View 1 (cartoon, rainbow, N blue to C red):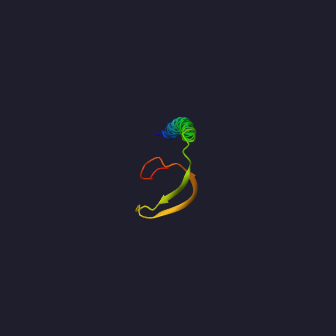
View 2 (cartoon, one colour):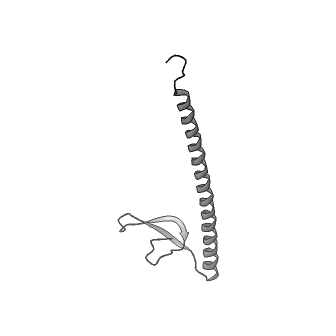
View 3 (cartoon, rainbow, N blue to C red):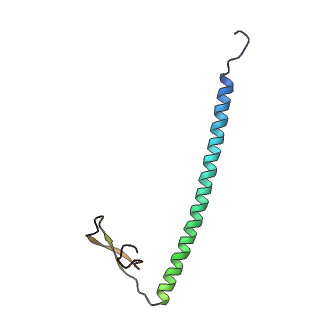
Length: 92
């Protein structure tokens, strides 16, 4: 029809608005995730410091740590020293 503008500009504006809202939501979720991960990292570091302090207080000496193959049969020496957290030496 002569004299009427096609609806395309309105659709483009709506798409841009939706993309802007989506990008803001993604950024907000990413920032929230980063905050939660930082808090979890800080708590884990504190737990490790407490564990090491308690192990040293009790006279538990760090031992050479080994890695296991995926099948669980092979063991490999590492350059790491520390403490095993489980009796079967699967977690250190």
